[in-house]
Image (tube, rainbow, N blue to C red; front, side):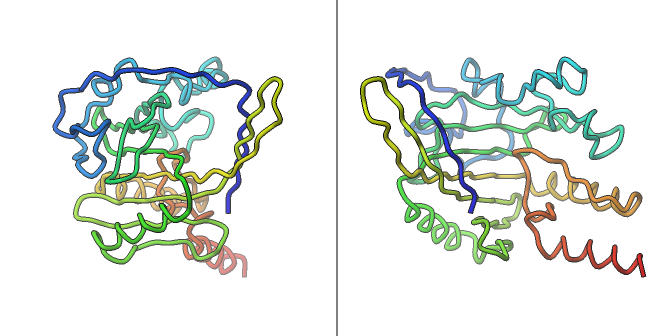
Length: 256
């Protein structure tokens, strides 16, 4: 299980009003309805002034020319997962805003869009949920909608699932963390947090990325992945034990 620790040095109380974006995927509920994503979303139109440019803008990479702001994967010239074609697209992250997106009864406070050739291919949503019960209920709901998960972890180190539909992969990732709240004049408060990520990836685009990774491996015998937040775990040997075992077995056979 992954663990994260966040230190909050101050509390800012604020209120905001959100303008409704004219898009079929926005409902009376606040934010983007993730169930109705159709990959025609325009992130620059949806996010507008809500973009957090610091998330995917690594200053050192930009200074050294390894990538430009919003490039994905960040530093693609430094870590060239696909040779001269390592640049994939642009990634746009929202600021942390309550209920910027939702999936049925779960509200998410950050969303991000991955584009390829100016078309949206994936949407990532983050939420802090109240308990692991919420996550377990979501697993049951998605299983009811889309059937048995096609991919899940083979160990207890991680908690994630993936479903396959006609045109997309839906991956959810769950982890526990600790939030530490420090305020002047008060005792430090510690509480457990429950974190949920939902990744919705266009099926054709995901298959193309996996094919590139496999083709590159066949040529170089060095399995590289397009690393970053928009990563389907089944294409990552560190998450997919069957894939990792297959690569190791091939390596050992070559050494004999």
